[in-house]
Image (cartoon, rainbow, N blue to C red):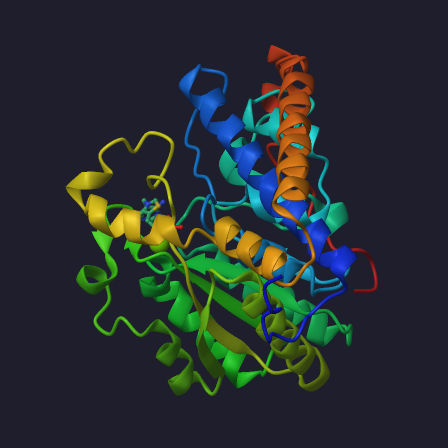
Length: 338
Ligand SMILES: Cc1ncc(C[n+]2csc(CCOP(=O)(O)OP(=O)(O)O)c2C)c(N)n1
Ligand SMILES: [Mg+2]
């Protein structure tokens, strides 16, 4: 029998197995999303998280779910699923059906679930970072011990609004963690061609913010550093800028069929060899947590679950035409006394 790897376990074996299930479920769920797009069941834009799953499974299992705030851009299915949003509602939203969280009017890019403290799902690159700063300001102002996790892409890290947001979050020492999902590309533009300094984590320095570049492929690493950072952020109201190194296995969006125009097959093959799920499987096996046959069984179960979710969501009707004018505006009148 192989000697167990010398890694500190960041969670109990039962939890580590449940994280394996989550990674597989997100993957199979999103393979179904791609199928929905290809067969005309999902319209608009659709961006999957395949290859980047540890960034949601690792970080979001270390926050207080339903208490801490989470906000991201349009690559948002995995965030909703790990936060506990109903997968059938999420798939229905992606298919534009009335059973979705936003009654089918938001679609893939705008998954939103206030009950889970998930504030979307935003399509304007970088724009939501200011909203993330606002969530953190609200928590500090109300003296609540909530941490805000604000995810963004490497391309979004160049947006002007992001620098303004970093400044205010640093100035006011807001309890927020910006997680740059550095998947090396902004659509078809490589990091070196869009960032003056591709070491994006350094952008925290001028804004009085702790900043680190971390690994985003290895779930065990992610679980370890995310716990440390979340605890520090909460206890000391310290903002962080995290650059998490990752890779998207697929194209930018479901309509991107020309990846080889901007990245080589060799590069993809290299990253596929250390795909995050395969890496985690090697860890589970070498630590005696799951055998290969147990993993195969779990994989089949999660595939089955994703298929059931897809079929259930597909039964949900489209919104009635008279719904087109509902929920367009919301009443933001402050309550008396505030
Ligand atoms: C303000 C703005 N400009 C351009 C676009 C078009 N656009 C959509 S995604 C994208 C690339 C963003 O890349 P990145 O932030 O690295 O995120 P990733 O897709 O890699 O997760 C661009 C330019 C947009 N949605 N909003
Ligand atoms: Mg990117």
